[in-house]
Image 1 (cartoon, protein in one colour):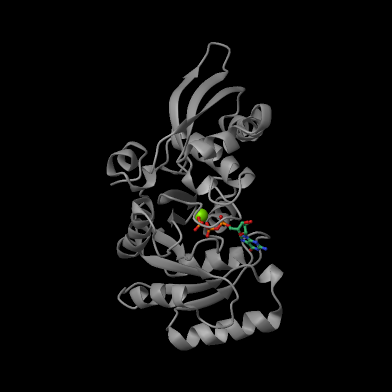
Image 2: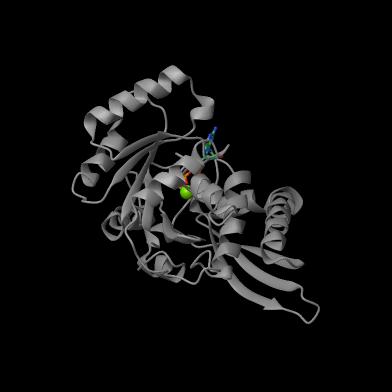
Length: 294
Ligand SMILES: Nc1nc2c(ncn2[C@@H]2O[C@H](COP(=O)(O)OP(=O)(O)OP(=O)(O)O)[C@@H](O)[C@H]2O)c(=O)[nH]1
Ligand SMILES: [Mg+2]
């Protein structure tokens, strides 16, 4: 019997949703950073094995939005619950169930598919804290399965995979078996650049960045030529992103190029420009242009 279905990974920002997705897929398809609100779109990936196909949705962290971009992110994450066969609710050892998680669990009470409690980051927490958290969470919600994992180290992830397959219905191959994601190459390239900006910049600067691919062409010798705009919200941020003698921009561009070369499997020539688009996170038009609107 062939089993298949859709699985959403939801939780607060920074709990390790994208890290888990990448570990399951065995390749980096969703960007990761130590800063909250890294993922901004629902990212769909497909894992096909002999007897099953799991279609995952990595979602933005659910938080209290402060601008229209945030509202969009939370809406698509919450909407994903309605369209799947299984929900992975990801959280980290906190002992008490916090307000943010309570808010998500309230919404999950309305859904009629299995919900797993996936407690991540057990590698950096004591066994006592893990046990206490599991106990407190299971008192406020009736989870179908409970599993502590480390997405970073891959601990218990195979066990999680087996459990997910157990709850999948019999079904078709929704996607061809060699397809791993529905994201375009362009999107992954843009995300890779944004990831480096998130990692290298600090405070509020990286959260106001976005990436626009202007051109992406392959030349006869196989090299990709990519031109991209790195957008930011303020003139003062532009200076910080460029850095002294262009040093910060060079760093972002070098790290991004290395990852993009690995991803595309060929040499890349990346030209990065910094542009200011004031308050883009609250502009419906700009959000639409940047792909943050349905
Ligand atoms: N120690 C430890 N760190 C982890 C683990 N999983 C993820 N992290 C770290 O947690 C941070 C956030 O990881 P992400 O995967 O970007 O988290 P996310 O839930 O996708 O975050 P958003 O996209 O902002 O909602 C990164 O620094 C990861 O390296 C884990 O199992 N153990
Ligand atoms: Mg993420």
